[in-house]
Each structure stands twice: as structure tokens, then as C-alpha cells.
Image (cartoon, one colour):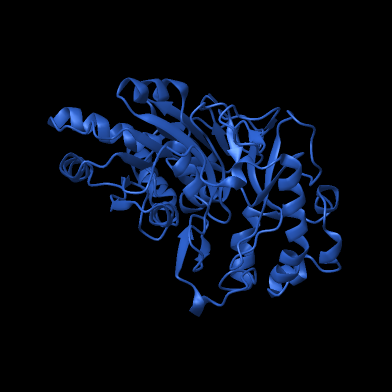
Amino acid sequence: MTEHYDALETREPILRERELFLHLPQFLAHAMLAPGWAAHLKGIDPKAVDARPVLAKLPLLRKSALPALQKENPPFGGLTVTPISKLRRVQVSPGPIFEPEGETQDYAGVARALFATGVRSGDVLHNSFSYHLTPGAWMFDAAAAALGCAVIPGGIGNTEQQVETIAHLRPSAYSGTPDFLKTLLDTATKIGKDVSCLKRALVSGAALPASLRVEFDARGINALQCYAAAEVGVIAYESQPRDGLIVNENVIVEIVRPGTGDPVAEGEVGEVVVTTFNPDYPMIRLATGDLSAFMSGQSICGRTNRRIKGWMGRADQTTKIKGMFVRPELVSDIGKRHPQLGRLRLVVSRDKEQDAMTLMAEAAEQDAALEATVAQTLQAITKLKGKVKLVPPGALPNDGKVIADERPVS
């Protein structure tokens, strides 16, 4: 079995760097055909951006700014080179952020991550990312097609039906969130269905705690993770040694000091910034809002690109819960719908190997009916179920924190 997707993965690091920055000036000129990028990079000479120190001087584009940009300049903030009529699909991420998908094969760069997980041509992949509006499922679907795999479009929900399908069609691989994989396995045990055909899993969209990985191992499933964003695809992915996440080919990753665009020293935790070469939807120094750090050395799997430690928290308070981004603005919207509430804090935790969230809300009266009503609003706004706990006025700290992510990093 071939261990690597192609020769790019084992290039000498110096050669990779040279080739990326040889291509970058031409690509920047291409990106600046889009009016949004022309305005954002005004005064920049693309020909001069031929090395990391020069790239580091370009302005950041914050992912959190995309909803406002798209509202001001619909549909995509002026950041697409390809007109909407020429796109394959248009999807929506929470925010909302409208995500264009072009005609490029494996446009999100997921195929390498699937290949590193052990997925090969002829395998059947059960894809449990949501196919409804959001881009995750389509990213993995396109990668499976590029590898020559059949796909079962499981999506989310209909858990027992998905288990029945897995038991009947016998797919060898799974893609989706780690939480939902556990749900499928537990449901299969409960209803007496054999899903032991699942041997490999590529999970994303939520944390993969060590305890849950041990559980998957015990069930005979080799679960690896990848780190991705809708705007840039797979940023980094695990290989079999599980010794960090390897930066994807054809992307440039920087780790910068939060609140600045300045690269930090290797090993120092900072914000992940990504530049891609997507001809339809270029991204130049996209500040993801995620924290990570570069690791020293290379993976023992033979891939020579740099490694990052994976997701280590948020540079801002936006967080990902069960694969969905929840932003401070959404918590604020809950307060606007219930003016009788005071300070709010969304606490994110883990409960029985699942993401869980509790909205702490100050209120003059501890009213169970109000708790239930606010819980309905919480689900309507975030698209996620959560608990609501009313506390007396002044009980929450006055520290400006709206979302408190208390999940363990590892």
C-alpha cells in the first residue's frame, strides 16, 4: 500500500517553501482581480511578496469580519474571482457566512487527510457531516470522489436509520464529528446492529479527547483528526503515528501573536493564519481565530511538512460546539430577545464524551418557565440544544467574557 498521497508530501522543506513562494506573487495578482481583494491589498505589489517575512507584512483578513463584508458587498464580500453563476454550489456557515464552491477537484484539500487515514480507492465512506446548507459534507464528499470511493450521504440525525444503513452496506470508513461517531456506535450496541465494518475514521468539527480516542481504539476504529475551515479547507491533518497535525500541501500556515499579524517563535502558542491557492475563492492571510503552535521536527510517517499541535482554543471567544461555530454576537441576540435577563455567559463543557453547553443568565426571579423559554431561544439562535441556568443579579463575573470554553484541550 502506498503510504503517501503523492510526491509533494515528501519534498525537501526548502523546496516546498521555494515552490510555494514562487507561485504566490502570480496568485496574489489573480486574487486582486476580485474587487474585495484589490481594496484589501491596496498598495501591495504582488511581485514583491515572495517570502514569509514579506507575506507577514500583509494585512490580516479576520474570519469574524466576513459576515459584515458579505452584507456590505453581497454575495461574497467581493472576495471571489469566479462569478456566482459559474460556481458548483453555494453553502452557508453559521454567521451567516456564504461559502462559494468552485469546479476544482477536491477543492478543500480533504483527500490527503482521508488518504493518511487509510482510505483508498474502492472503499465506501459513510459521511455524517451535514449536507444541509453547510459545506462540511460536500468537502469530504468531493475528496472521496477524488480518491475513487463511494459515499453514503448519512448527514446528521436519523441515527437508527444510519446505523441500519451501515450494518447493511458495510462501509469501512467514517467521516463526521467524533461525537456523532460515538452516538452511532452506542446506538448500534443498543439496537443490536453490527457496525464492526467501520475500521477507519477521519473526524473534524469538534475536539477529539484522548479518552474518546481510546474508546474508538477499543472498538477497533482508527480515528484520526483533521483541522479545517470552510473558507480554506483542510489546514492540517493527522497521520498514523498521531504525532501532531501535518500542514496540508498548497497552503501557507503562519502562527501569529493574537491581535497582531506578527509571527511568533516556533513552539509559542498563537493564532492560526492561512493563505490558500483556491482560484475561485482566494484567501490571503485569513486569521482563523484559532490558537495552535508549530511543533519542531517532522512526523515519523515520512511527510516533511511542518506540524501544528492542533486546536488549542480560541484567540477570540468564538468557539465550535458539535461542529457549529457559536459567536458572542449570538449570545447577545439571546439577551435582546429577553430583556429581563442581565449578564449572560455560555459555558461549554463535556458530558459523557459529548459537547455540552449551559447558558448562565442573571435574572431577578428564578423562574422555571423563563428558563424553558430561554432554552428554546438558545436552540433557535445557535441551532444547538443546551441548558439554561438562571442566577441572581451580580452572580456572574464582570470580566467581559461571554463564552467560557471549559473543555479539556487534550
